Amino acid sequence: MRLLIALLLPWLTFFTIGRPVSGVICLLLQITLLGWLPATIWAVYALSQYKTDQKIKHLQRQLSR
Image (cartoon, rainbow, N blue to C red; front, side, top):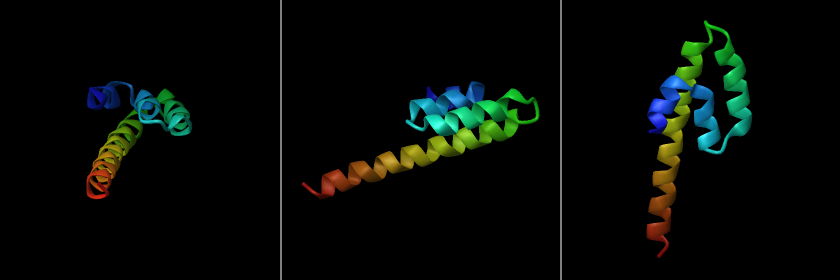
């Protein structure tokens, strides 16, 4: 679901992963027609980093038990 949001509304992705400042910057970039593609790429990249961070945290919790 977040990937679809990242493709359609890149700025909203940052709010869903807890990065509101990046979301505002992305929204300003997305407002320009030329900035839409970089904003989308940035949002997809940030989402993949978020998922990786979540997996690492999950593994650390499992190992610490």
